[in-house]
Image 1 (cartoon, rainbow, N blue to C red):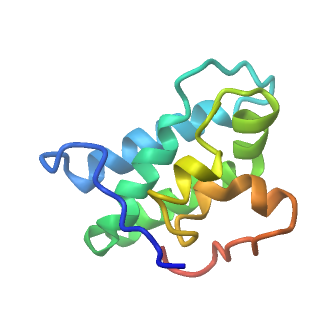
Image 2 (spheres, rainbow, N blue to C red):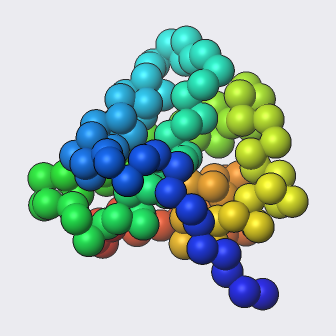
Length: 126
């Protein structure tokens, strides 16, 4: 199956630093130990894809921040999107498989959770 090429979610006018800060803020909220989550955090998926599309612009410190946030997505993303149903429709194959390749693993946290897709190695570069 041919892998899709995602479109940018945020304006091209955003600096990569701004995208990383927005992504990290969503992930900081997802890291709430009391799981006081609200709808809307699912935008982390879109911002992370934008970062992936522009990853050649990342500095080492921004890459470190992305990997910190990625670890939170691996830990809590499935629960937020699927268990708490805040990502209704976003994990449906009919939606994501047309838009995001599996290399954008954050769109496939359910498959990672169920062991259908290999967990990404966050020690590797973005």
